[in-house]
Amino acid sequence: MERSSQKSAYSWARDALDTIARANWYREVRDIEGLPGPVVQLQGQDVINFASNDYLGLAGDRRLIAAAIKATERYGTGSTGSRLLSGHRPLHRELERAIANLKQTEDAIVFSSGYLANLGTIAAVVGKRDLILSDEYNHSSLKHGATLSGATVISFRHNDMEELTARLQQVRHEYRRCLITADSLFSMDGDLCPVPELLAIAETYDSMLLLDEAHATGVFGISGAGVVEHFQASGSELIQIGTLSKALGSLGGYAAGSATLIDYLRNRAPSWIYTTGLSPADTAAAKKAIALIQTEPERRQRLWDNITYLQEQLKLRCPQWQAIASDTPIICLPLETPQEALQVGQQLRDRQIFAPAIRPPTVPTSRIRLSLMATHDRQHLDCLVDALCKVTELLQSREVSS
Image (cartoon, rainbow, N blue to C red; front, side, top):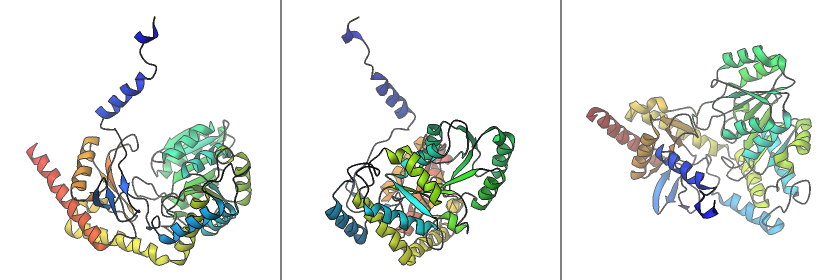
């Protein structure tokens, strides 16, 4: 058969995209101009930004920008190699010590992204003879790290400590090592994991505990160390993962824990050993951000003031959405279908609110995800409440007409 009459070996991709589009799962990027902030220019339109993970508003801070420029002028634009070869700079260890100080751990190790931190750490600490217990709402990086490790993976219902305990009772004795994994602040639902209970269960069943503090670092805790500090569990024996790209306004990830664990990761974490070190600019910006969250607690307090104010306004002016308010910067607005989520996202956009639809397979059910920033002012929050109330009226009128 001639090649010209054969179906292309890549034609499956178009078929797959058509299927994704029919399910209203199709995604595409949208241009945002200018510096990050509470108001951004999205495809030429000024919108109030409730889609950002820049919880403290540091990504556009001039001091982080200055630190990045200074590091670039001294060390160049790239690290040029893996940390174990040509890619290590004094800045990297300075940042790792700053992270360890913030997290109150013996040491820390910096990866080139939070995703790589989870992949590399999980793959290093467990293997084919081991067991992983994973919260069903865990971030994709935790799930993919578990798969990469080759360990047996058992999922337990979200924050269900009874099911976790039952699973461990049934099968823990069959495996060499065991790792329990969970987000500390779940990024799409805005709730916390029960850190004290997880620590107790891990100790009872001779298991390691890994908590992903990506969305909590800089936000929770008296010093901004995260949910572990929030629950007064600093100093406990566990593995803490996080990112530098959310409240810290830069790029990269880290693992923090005992000196022995971190030394082991330097020798066994594939996503650290075999990738280029974090760029000097990102490293310096993250280091500056950690210094600012420790010396400027008022920035974190402004975020919590905004959370409280939004809760009050929803209760007063838009009680039908009161239930969605959470005690975190993340608010989940559940919707029945991907199409409805897309429609609500567009209705909010029409009112200058940027809060895009989140759909499967990113999450099990469609929703609008709202995230607050310390740099939002009261007028921004009032506009959000107004828009939510108007969107609610439209949804209710559709239900009546149908």
